[in-house]
Image 1 (cartoon, one colour):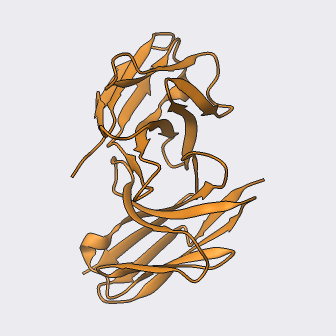
Image 2 (cartoon, rainbow over the protein chains, first blue to last red):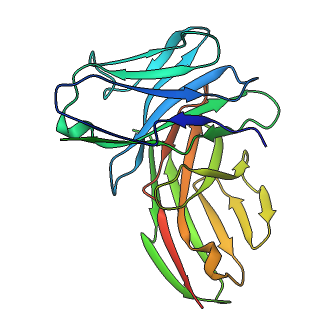
Amino acid sequence: EPEVTQTPSHQVTQMGQEVILRCVPISNHLYFYWYRQILGQKVEFLVSFYNNEISEKSEIFDDQFSVERPDGSNFTLKIRSTKLEDSAMYFCASFEASGANVLTFGAGSRLTVL
Amino acid sequence: EDQVTQSPEALRLQEGESSSLNCSYTVSGLRGLFWYRQDPGKGPEFLFTLYSAGEEKEKERLKATLTKKESFLHITAPKPEDSATYLCAVHLSGNTGKLIFGQGTTLQVKP
């Protein structure tokens, strides 16, 4: 069964450092997303990406965040200068928008900011 | 404001003891309602999508139903392996996949 792959599974970083989280969406999907889940809280939408540009972003997705699809297969989330409150699980998801109409999530990348 | 609320927050059942989880929603326009299962430290795993009031879907011991204001996830004769957090999320009309999640119901099934 097709799956969304995320790396790394866990990253520990110092406050103020840049991190890049990587995702390989399902190959025939056209819409890509990043969500995050702070421990014990709801899964929250960060950003959606379609046709090589951001289609929607939340209030959380400020200037410290950016997304990119550099090579047609990878989809990355960059946090420029991490803060303690960025510690969370970050989930990548992709969406076919036809047929099954299912948003498929990856296993997540746990980010710990010290 | 679009909102999704799940109840109860936690549920403990004995193996074989059937029950229901609730997801109530207040949204401007519903394109679909999703149920996901989430195991600790893992990503949400898709279970069902429901599109219109009156719709029902089943998978093994799980059955999801939808009304105009809420959805139920019925668990019949649960087993310990059904223990997980069950997430409800709404997909709003007019956008392309952004989901609004509830806080989840953590189910524990004891043998």
